Image: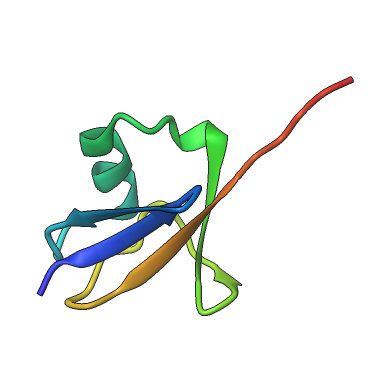
Length: 64
């Protein structure tokens, strides 16, 4: 069962065993534009995805 990354209403499936950083690179999502969370808690980009993980990517908004 792959891991899932959720961003802006879209679900992306990625293989488990890779890091969040690797998954984002594979999906061409810039790391600096999202904050990964799991079960409402922040997770680091170095965290390895486990079978069935669901990671919600919160878009970073900046402005002035």
